[in-house]
Length: 478
Image 1: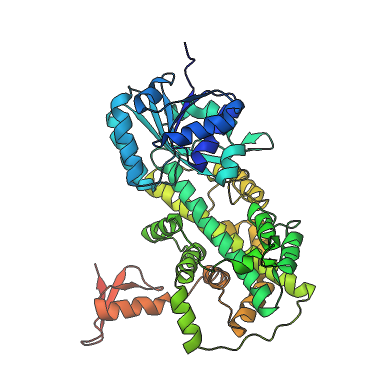
Image 2: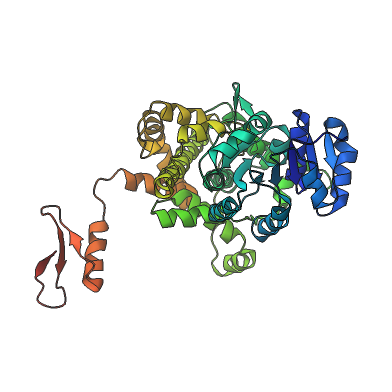
C-alpha cells in the first residue's frame, strides 16, 4: 500500500513546483496535482529523486493520497482561479481539512474564503510566500494567516521549509483571516518603493554623471558592505554586470524601460488611502511604474517638450556617498510608512499584528531581506507602541545624518531634469512629519468657506463655522 503524503501541492508552475520540491527535500511526502498533467510528469521525471512524491492526474486521487486531516496548498493565479479550485476541492474534503492559498491574493478575498470555508467546517489559511522561485526552493519567508489551531497543524512543515536566519525560521503565525496575505501585500508595497529608489539612484549615475552599467555596478558593489546591504542591492549588481554577448553591450541597456506590475503595490496604496495612512513612497513607486508603461506618450512628449541633456560630470566619492545616504534615508521612510500602515490595519481589523515578528521573518528568504531589518527587530524588541519608526533612535539618527546629502541629491535631480518621485516624496514626507504646525489650517478654512465643514481653533474648545458669504460672523457648532 502506498504511504500517504503529508502535503498536497495543487498548481505546479514555477513557484508551486519549487515549493513541492522544497517540502520533499525536507523529508515530507508530497502529493502533486496540476490541471495539465504533463507538468506533474515533468516534475517527477526531473526531480523525483529529491524526495517522496505521489503524482496524480485526477483531483479525487490527489485528495485520496493525503493523510488526514489533509493539508493542501494551492499555487494558482489570484482571483477567480483560486475560487474555482476551492469549489472543486470542497466536495472531496472532510471536516478539519486545511486549504492553504499560497498565492498573492487580496486579503479581503482571503477573509471571504476564510468565512465561507469555516461555515463548511473546513480550515482556510491565506499564506504570503516571498522569495521568488529561488526562495520557494531553498527557503522562502512564509506569512500564514487563519485560525491559530490550523497553523499549529502546518507549523512543523512551514517552519522547516522556510528560510532560516541565526537558527530562527522565517515563518510565523500572523493573525486570523486575511492577516497573512495583508502582511505580504505590504511587503510587496515596500518592495515597490525599494526598487524604485534603486532605479532612481541608477538613473542619477547614468543621466547626470554619464556612468555605464559596469561602473554603476561597482558602486552598488561597494554599498553591499554598508547598511544598504540587501538582496535587492545584491541582484542590482548582478543585473548591471550582465553583458549581452551578441550585442556587445550591457543587457540592461537593451531591456525596454517599461515596468509591469501584478497589483499588490496598487492594493497597498489603495488600502493606505482607506486607512488614512500617508504612504507616499510606495504610492509614488506605483505611479512611476504606471508612467513607465506609457512609452508611446513619453516618446511623443520628448519631442514636444525638449530638454537639454545634462552636462555630464565625473562623480566624486562625496557625490556617490550623497546618493547612498539619500537612498538609505528614503528607504527608512518607505519601511516606516509600511509599518505604520500595518499598525493601523492591526487596529482596524482586530489582528494584533506582532510587527517585531514580521520584521524577523522578513530577514531571510523574502525579496526585501536586508541587514536593515535587524534594526527594525531591535526597535520592536524594546517594547511599547511605535507610532513611526523614524522616531526611534537609530532611524532618527540615520535620517538626520543623511539630511544634507538627501537635499543635495533632490536638488541635483531637479536641476538636471531627472525624475525622482520616490526620493523627493520621501523627503517631503519627512519635512511634513517633523512640523508640529503645517499649512492645513488654511485648507480647513477653505473647506469651511465652500462646504461649511467647520474647523477647530487653537485657543478655544469645540468646532466653529464662519458665515463667510453672509455677515462674516463666527458661530460655535454644537
